[in-house]
Image (cartoon, rainbow, N blue to C red; front, top):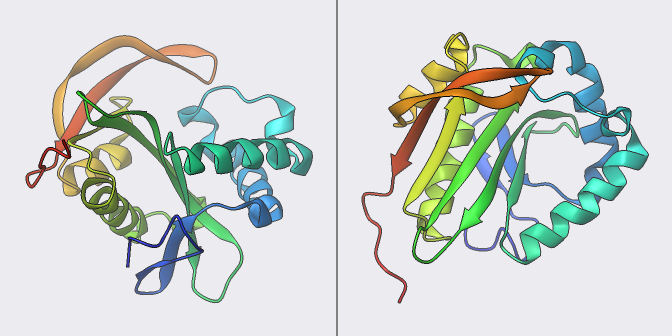
Length: 193
């Protein structure tokens, strides 16, 4: 299911929805996702330039993301309801460092209308499994603001353990925000060398 995801448009099948890597064909859908959720996501995300909410801006960004996928430097997944072209959420893996760290960061967001349905838990579980099994990562790290109870619950249900609190860790919505640092380790990790 996972191994061919980079070579063609393979899909991770999850009940009523699917998860796959974003492609340049998704420019309209990803732009619509961020336009539709602009106010909803604003308290949890960095301030965005206006181009982030335009198709032209996403055309440029998607070209960059495809190159990052190709060089195994980042992976940007989209979540879609089966039979729909609309994007319901995203899961992205960044800051990929291989030997000797074998670690990366994960971030995610979900459409306001999909909240509370367990979608992100399933998507995060499957993409983490792919990062462990197919990409050989040992540690995946995630951070959330202490008052973001939904994100805390998603990470806990997906096996991420709190490792500490970082003061003024990320610039979110124009303010330096404290974050709870979490990580999940690959229990089956084996050295590729």
